[in-house]
Length: 638
Image (cartoon, rainbow, N blue to C red; front, side):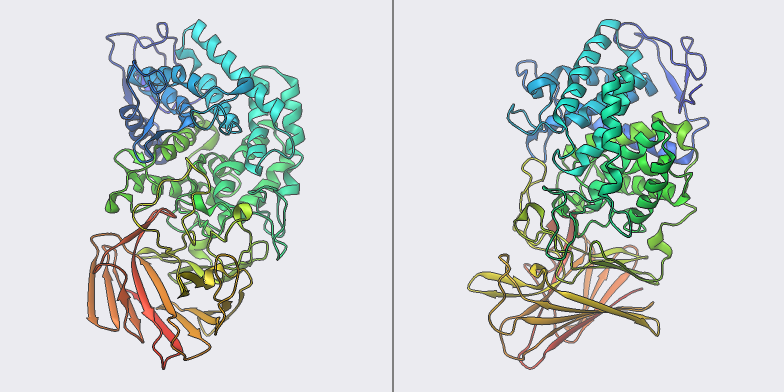
């Protein structure tokens, strides 16, 4: 018998078994009381967070019978649109209806599915927006969500309504079967289709779907890199190599979408060979989790959607990593840490895209919530497969010492004492437009055990490369990646546009020392005409981090060293001298000592916010004086 997370105290229910309710609702006038008896700490946390999210989604559900195009939809007050994939929230709402016995959750799910006719596309598909010409590949995600809702909670529906939902689901998975092939879109679609076709093939007893699922699953080893077995294919074409010979890889999509689906398939199919391969792949991906549960996607091909905890429109890492925790307990730690981070990033009941939405007054996009709520519901519906997860086994970046190079990315992860760093020269370009993610030998991430993130790379320019899947950037766009830059006739030249930068490192006498050779380059990959070469140094020992920027000429050419340090509104800024700046965070004091005075861009102590990855910064600007070739900043945390 399946272990239930909650035990309902009701004459209608025997322990561990939910009995049928009246028609399409719960018994009128009967108060259902639930206890948390027998739940693990992780299950309690997951349930409480899911309830917060579901309550907020109901709050933002449109109730306007005069407008059938919007009535029942989940309105996004951040983007001021209705996101077409909102119907995927049917699964978490149905879970919450079943778990609590509260009618409001079932009513919301019914309204949402009624509304979903507004995103019906051709041949059984759903569309990404209320526009029949918008992208319909997302049907695979909606099919899984509706399928999970019916599998676990279909008993809440009347016989006729369940038959209606089943019929709509059958149209959706038929579309996936007919439309998806081995070259369809980006790799996350095909990998997700592996699970969708297998799961719903069994649900509908359709052998053709199961056969197609296995055909797609046979492709998995071909889309794993060497030597770390990272999934590639997050671009189109999916196997197009960069000038360095590197494939398109996105950590956010891999851990929050693709790995989940293939793990779920492999477990159902009992494919031990694939499970062993996936264990190795997940261990490779886990190297990119920061100790606070964030996924370092500072360099990924789809970094435009990096939201610190993952990626904007994906599902969350919890299913795959929780289901595989018996193979490596650190996977369970990852699931717990990331859920804690999701909780920290929840603002006004909705999941925000980073740590500083609330402090900067930014509304969270509702897409984050209805996407990630599905994964929490899946965890709670599968507690008997997952077991008791905890944080006893650390993730690699918490305990590793030294530098690890990922040749398939040309990315270096460094750890020395409390300092965690990421340096990137990855040269894949999303949609072959501009180098949008952190590269050029940039220090994409600097993270400290006491205060968390100090640097995170944003897009070089906040380009809306996926309309309706990115929130508008508030105020003026300002890149928050540390860099050297120069403006010539309104053209921006910087090392973070350089796709040919070189990185070397040494690790001796307790100090990691990254050395970077880069060229000031514009968005079209043209070099600055005069004195365009720069040298960068990032040094870390247990007590401090030192950042150096050196130019090859003393000529006054307006070069600046830009150091946007993570700091949310309200943190006190103290300037003991013109060469020292202190940030007083609640966790500790960050002290920056430089050899030239620092300026703060904009108004005094004003914070600048960037949607990637949802952070505020205090933008420090160091101008190269005429007689000085090198600028140096020493950072300590006390």
